Amino acid sequence: MKKTSQISGFYKLSIEERIQILKEFAGLEPEDVELLKRPGALPIERADKMVENVIGKIEIPLGVAANFLINGREYFVPMATEEPSVIAAASNAAKLTRSKNGITTSNTGPVMISQIQTVGVNDPFGAKMAILENRQEIIEQANNQDPVLVKLGGGAKDIEVRVIDTKMGPMVITHLIVDTRDAMGANAVNTMAEALAPTIEKITGGRVYLRILSNLAVKRLVRAKTVVSKEALGGEEVVDGIVMAYAFAEADPYRAATHNKGIMNGVTAVVLATGNDTRAIEAGAHAYAARFGRYTSLSTWEKNKDGDLVGTLEMPMAVGLVGGATATHPIAKLAVKILGVKTAVELAEIITATGLAQNLGAVRALATEGIQRGHMALHARNIAINAGAVGEQIDRIAEIMVKEGKVKMDRALELLKQLK
Image 1 (cartoon, rainbow, N blue to C red):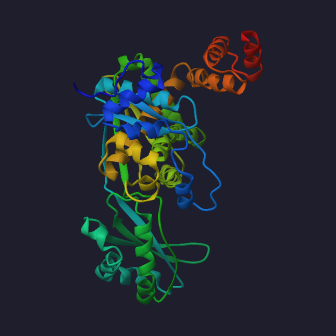
Image 2 (image 1 turned 135 degrees about the vertical axis):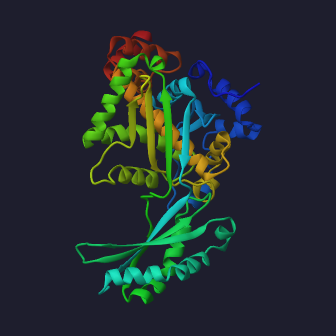
């Protein structure tokens, strides 16, 4: 029987039923299932080794988005988020993308940039040429810092040099271009850059200050594309509404900020679930959205000649499978197992595809019934819980509040009193 992540009414199932489906889909072991159910799956002793001054842990709900078909392969996508409606929206949108064979992706490889800042150079453009003339020596010295990475097919591949004007005068910025393979690569590229500082100073006669990676990872891009039939969306009018919503975000940074936040709802949830660096991904995404001098939409939405919707998303995606929390956090390791990914670029493609689906869910809602209808239906449960509802009371109170259009604490308290 062919495995599929397209399961009708998945959200209606009990936690036990969902886990059983996931167990069969991803080949989870009994200990994996136990880990999912266990409160505090991250031992406090391990947390104490991960960060400084540990006093406890904070738990974020972990769910899976269903219905994802990416490059012809089925996925359940683990997502860690505290926000209601995010996982539901991603799942619903992923289902829509299946109307035209799901989401396809591509990537530019796991290539990072490390920057070496040189100041106090009398002839900055001459210094630039001198650095480039010593390209081979610089690359060899960088690769001597990480022979294991080189053995795996990665390592420093090239250099680029820029001269920039600043308030402190001209600066010569050397970019070391490094293939980091299945690592995010921050430690590797920073170590290389620090080792190169004396060489760059000798070549230029200047002084090196900063030696650090850039999170604007323009050489580590991932692209995702989907075509959604107009029938699946509810007609060509809905397609037009989505394209209008995109045009607004493309033109206006106030709209683009929230539009891109919707993309990052999906992206960050998967990045967090897999133990990767959410801040690095957020910084790179928003910088990339402003790379042409103004902040704009990361995604595009168009209507093709058949009247169907075409969506694309291109963004930096510097994530890894080795090192960091991905290798130490038990749940992060399990999330990677659920995905079944073998390389960092495959993980990056899944994350970007999730961001595109999340964006589709948001713009479709905005172009039709509005964002609040679905969001408030799920938010009502949190209000009911905060009011003190338990068990079946939660769903009953939430249902009444949504029906009335009064999702408020005072109304939840009134309803709870009536039910009691």
